[in-house]
Amino acid sequence: MKILLAEDELRIAADIATVLKASGMAVDVVKDGESAWFAGDVENYDAAILDLGLPKLDGLTVLKRWRANERRFPVLILTARGMWTERVDGINSGADDYLPKPFEMEELLARLRAILRRSAGQAAPVLRSGPLLLDTRQMRISLRGIPVPLSPLEYRLLAFLMHHAGRVVAPTELAEHLYDSGNDRDPNTIEVIVARLRRKLGSDVIETRRGFGYLMPDESR
Image (cartoon, rainbow, N blue to C red; front, side, top):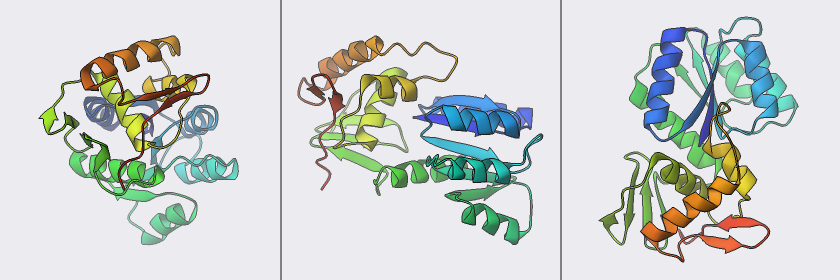
């Protein structure tokens, strides 16, 4: 999962980015509203964490511009503002959740994971595809009840496919959501990671649709 973090307080931004990366996510960090608006408008993010009190362009204006341009990724608002009317404005402008400062990192992670699941049509924190289980809270993969260790890239790719189970995902889309903007996004590396996952989880876990991409069967229902 690839997250846009728009936060101008450097210490808070660094702490959040560290926690997100440790939780298996790729993170792009911007420090002002103009950069946030541009990044969210041109990149494909799975979610954004957006501070309302950004310089150059406030967070609420950024959010309204994203939604006006039909950027539909879920948005978690961070705010130090105490007025409930401002939080309502954020929700009415298209935010999916909000978190007042100061906050605990565990709550931020829980809320972020929840909006990620909802945006993908997943309700439970444990995702299932046949005998494969992915616990998004603990970042644990198990196959028929046996834990399977994965590298960070393997985990991110598998998590993205399981969040979008039942949909064919192109290698270019996987590459966009697997890496932050500072890294190479060569779609050819996706084939290598998928091959490693198949060696660990079984050749039939991820289907290949020639010329289209990869499919994780939706067997959760």
